Amino acid sequence: MSSENSGQILKINAENKEFKEKIQDLSGEKIDLCFQCGACSSGCPMVQEMDYLPSKIIRMSQLGLKEVLSSKTIWVCTTCFNCEVRCPRGIDIANVMEAIRQVVLRQKFDKVNIDMLTPEELRELPQIAIVSNLRKLTA
Ligand code: SF4
Ligand code: SF4
Picture: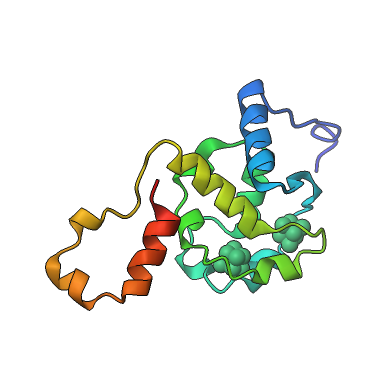
């Protein structure tokens, strides 16, 4: 870092702060504890399908960036808890993912619409997959 930039303080505005607090309240996680070690991302089995790494989702949440709401990552997370057991700061990242999904779902946005599935899909898809998708991804 150049001497010109040293000492700069990153500030978030009131809207970002409110959004960050909402994520913290809903998840019950102290996301400020994250120091971006990357252990969660390196152990996540789903990163190839994600647009943002789990550690980046946590960083964006710390900054109160609402871009996390449109992230593919929050829907791809399988809640496998690999990240949680690796996190040296004890953050349950899956809880944070769930909190962000809740914010989206409270806007009455359905990721899965059963009416859009064709009769063939309904016949061939495993029932457990349909039920679990409806539970996780619909408002
Ligand atoms: S809980 Fe989600 S983010 Fe964490 S390792 Fe599993 S898939 Fe990745
Ligand atoms: S493992 Fe924990 S501390 Fe490390 S980047 Fe992920 S959330 Fe942050």
